[in-house]
Image (cartoon, rainbow, N blue to C red; front, side, top):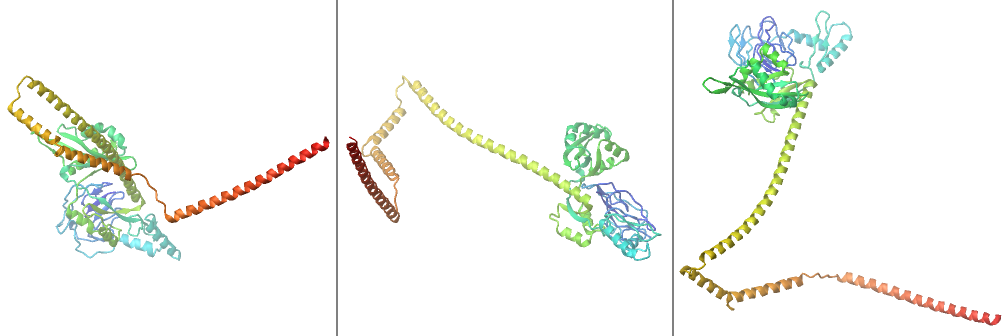
Length: 508
C-alpha cells in the first residue's frame, strides 16, 4: 500500500501523472494517478472542469486538500516521502508556470465545479436513465449496493461508459482507520528496507551471499560496504531486511550513505531489475517525517473517508508522538494488518519465553552462588584457624631457647591476673556458675512446662460419665440375663439326667 503526496496540475480536466511506487509513501510530486491500491495525497489543480475526485480516474486513496480545487496554471511546492512504512526523502519540483508558496499544496483561486465523474456517480446511484422505465429504480439500488461493496460497474446511460466502483469510492462501507508507528530514524542513518519473498531462515543462512550480491548491485566499489542492520519475519513467508551502506573516503574517514540517495539508486530501472532477481519485492526508506509533513497529512482526511471519522481517529490516537492514523480499505488490508499483528505477537511471545528462560537460569545460578559463598565462608574460617595454629607453633619454635622478654613477662602477668579473677569464688567464676545453674533450672522448668496436658470441659465430662453409666447398666442387665439362662440350662440338664436313669431301670 503506497501513500502518495502529490500536487497534480494540468489543463482541460487532465493532469500529468507520475506513478508512485507500490507499497510505499510516494513523493510530493505532480501526481494525479497511482498504481494499485496507492493512497494519493493530492490537491488537484486544473484550468478546466474538475470535480470531487479530479478530472482523471484516480484509483489512489486520495489525501487531498480540496475536492476538485482549481488554480489556473499555478502549482504547489511539493516534498516527497519514501515508500511503505518508511519515509523517504524530499524532492522539490518546479512546474512551468508560477509557483504557489502558500503551502505544500497549491491553494485554490477559483470556485470548485462539479466533475464529470461526480455527476456520473450521482446519476448512477440516484437517477439512471438506462432503460427509461421503473426498472431504472431497481438499477439505482443495485448501483448503490455495488458502491457500498466497493466493486462492480454502475450503468446509468446508454451513451456514457459505466462508473467503475472501487473500494476507494466515498460510499464504500468497508473502511476503517488504524494506526502505524512512525519511524524515528534520520536520513543520515541511511536505513533502507528491502522486503524479500523468502523465509527468514533462508535469508540468515545466505546472509553473506546476500551482502555480496547487494555490493555488486551497488557497482562493486571497494569504498562501499554493505551492512545488515537487522532482519524480521513478515507474513506470507516474507522477510524484511534493513541495510545501510558505509562509504570510505581516501583520507580514511567514513560516512553512511543517506537513505534517500541509496533508495534513489535502488529505484533505477536496471537496479530494480537486479533486485527483483535477488527476490526483492519492495524497497523503502526508513526515515522520520517532518512536523510540517505530519501536520499536512493530518489536516486533510483521505478521499472517501468521512472527515468526522478522521477527526475522531486523531482524537483516539493512543500516542500522537509515535503513531499516525492510516486508512484501511477493504478486507485485504485488514487481513494484512491482522497477519502483521499476529506475527508481532508471536515475536513478542518468543522474546518473553527467552527472557523467562534467562530469568530461570539466573535464579539457578544465584542459588548455586549463594551455596558456594556459604561453603567458601566455612572454608575460610577453617583455614583461618589452621593458619593461627601454624603461627602459634612457628612462634613457639622461633622463641625456643630464648629468655622471656620484658613485654612477654608483662603479658604473662596480665594473663595470670585475668585467670585469677576468673577463678576467684566471688568474682567472675562464681557469677558464671550461678548463671549456669539458673540456665539449667530454666531449661528444667521449660521441659516440665512443655509436657502435654489435656483439659476436658465440665459439660463434656458430665456427658462422658452419663454415657459410661448407661454402658455399665447395660452390662449389668446382660449379666443378669446370662445368669438366668445358666440356671435354666442347669435345670434342663438335671431333668435329662433323671429321665435317663429312669429309663435304664425299666429296661433292666
